[in-house]
Image (cartoon, rainbow, N blue to C red; front, side, top):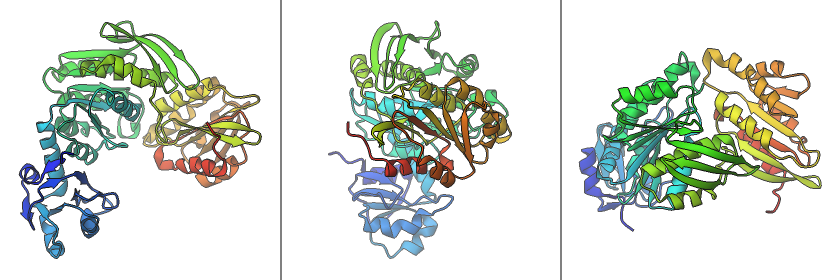
Length: 472
């Protein structure tokens, strides 16, 4: 297996000063001594809460082939005999290595951003393109000022498709990241009220998302949600950034990647679409209209990246949800089973409405009920009360039978939902867990959704610990 990096190439890329020699090869790049594998380089990044230099000794003991450390930390680490690359700033060195990885790569690079759906889109792109050639993509949500350069630095030279998620919660964050990634294709999944506490309105969010166009390579493509109310503004901003090739995806009649038919089933969907004039049909392994919308972006990007579309369409059928992002569990309750839908990783008004629509279409069994367990949507600022209470309409339209809420910001929703919907509010997650443990009945479908910082993943774990999984 080819090494990820030649040691001297790393030295040159980072303008580093070697101490204790230079390893011939480096097999990977790590910033966490707990997960580091022998042969990898350890970058001692200083974060808000931890300083990687405090774990340099542990990284050396774990088998790091080289430590990348800051010059001013060398005296404290001088006793170590492992090779070290000394730099003025470790995070800056990681950025330099990421830039070197991008410069040597011949891969087709795809960058994804959006207020909702970017991680799902990135993961699905990785899944389908892996059926075509070697793929490299960011893990989890490595989409910020350290996650993006780390993902780039980890990209093997033989990669055929590189997929990068780029996130933001303030203006100006995407620009330096996308200029580092330099994508051939830039996708904006959706503009919605996420992180609205840091912005005046949706137009400001659209401007921030449109920063992704500023790093497109010459001749690159902008793929924009044609059904989004902010499409015209995004297209204008793309043109202003010098992008000549702009295409929309969606059901809109003028979309270049146009949905022509869709059938939404309980655990999957089937679609037909016109992709730049090519008619395709596919089964999608995940349910939901919002998933179909993301798949249209995937089909457009795969086409523009030169992928074998027959292989891509075939692979769509085997897409699976990730933990916290729609993963489903069939659990035993009494003499039957119920379905638990784990949407606990993230939430904003757009993704909440999509999840409620998904719950609405879910098939309950027998006398089963549709149960929504919702928590705070964070970073909405002064718009929080309005946007939380605004979920009352979608909840009523979704035919929810029981509603459980927790979190200080979502309390306003308890007063806004129609009186004919059973609603229970608890201030803390722990109190809500106590209430929920005896709730499931055979045939129920229970969806759990909140912003990650609220800790609703603990509810999911408690359910999985309490109720045994039904055999497939």
